[in-house]
Image 1 (spheres, one colour):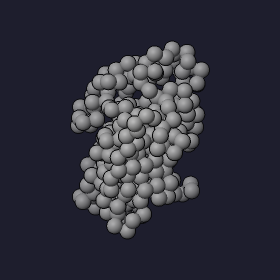
Image 2 (cartoon, rainbow, N blue to C red; image 1 turned 45 degrees about the vertical axis):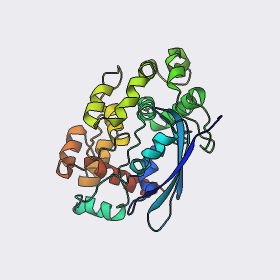
Image 3 (cartoon, rainbow, N blue to C red; image 1 turned 135 degrees about the vertical axis):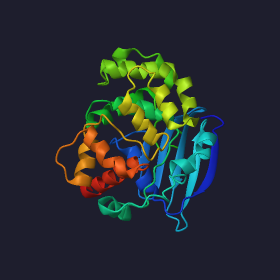
Image 4 (tube, rainbow, N blue to C red; image 1 turned 120 degrees about the horizontal axis):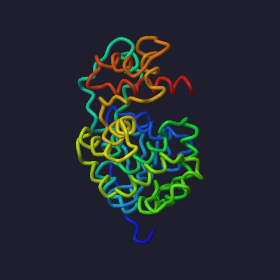
Length: 290
């Protein structure tokens, strides 16, 4: 990349476990845009200023995280690095007891980070609509490597799809990647209004979600995923998911069956930290599977 932009920073995040915080960003196996390790992470993404990558390294006893950003979006990413690692997330009023209290004692370094990368998170979520995670992972890899670019400073990672290139794509080219007509149309429509999507990063989650849902094919599930990942809202409840209600119900009440209504009922006492409770349940499940 000619005249590559590089900027560095140090984020102080005492009490934060960046691996726990950033781990959910790598939920799709083999995601070519992100890699999270025990003491470092790198993410290639798309910002209002263009593509960029952010590399983070931690392990300092004082909670310092070293940040190196590359690309056109370097300055934008640097300014939001503290939000990404969860340093802006306030847990001072989260004092749960019972099963959630026990989970919090095990995973109290987890924070709800905010990426701010609306375009990246939207395309990533659209690909995951209504399909198995394994299939979504494969389709996301194909989409990214076809419409993204290898990033300098990204340690071999690719940027998410270039919205201008994706806006010109024919739906059949996405269907050839396994992406059905409905999701293909949603991705292309989102790409055509990408310039308006970028500016949503600085809105409050409720207003941003309302505007996102004006895009055909973006419903409550997708909007709530972005509320959690992009804006870092610790009280988001992700509805319309096939697995989350059972995870919450089995974790909190030992239920073997559950729907959205049961999940919402069980999470109600934990306002304004309902999404935080989901993250704790996910962390426990991930640890059991490791």
